[in-house]
Length: 137
Image (cartoon, rainbow, N blue to C red; front, top):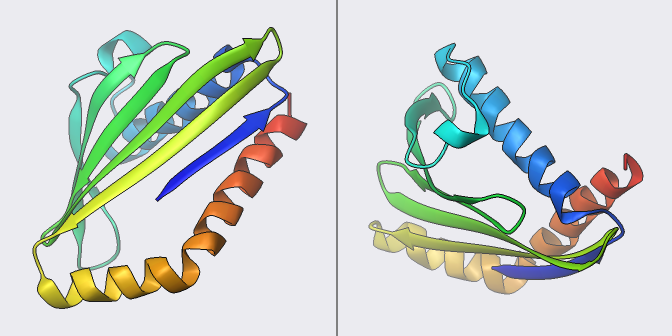
């Protein structure tokens, strides 16, 4: 899935919101307080639900331009990337890309069907979340 939207916030503001969310998740999961400079390459284990865990690895942190992480579960590998392109002081173009590779054939087929039928809804909801962040600016 790929979604591109323009927001009336600075790239710095939006990047910091996403980084803060990640830092808070790490603190809640591991009890460790990290700084932004310590994120790249950091990996931690988190529970998805009662029965499943995921290994999250932050692979790229380029302040105000890119934030990328990988989520590995027992049967899937998901890469999520946020790219920020500053258009003006308080205007940013955000590109979000999610690539999922699944080792389970049935799950891969189910994902394809879901993405074809409901991909537009995922994009819509993602843009809605970003617009919500815009109102807090």
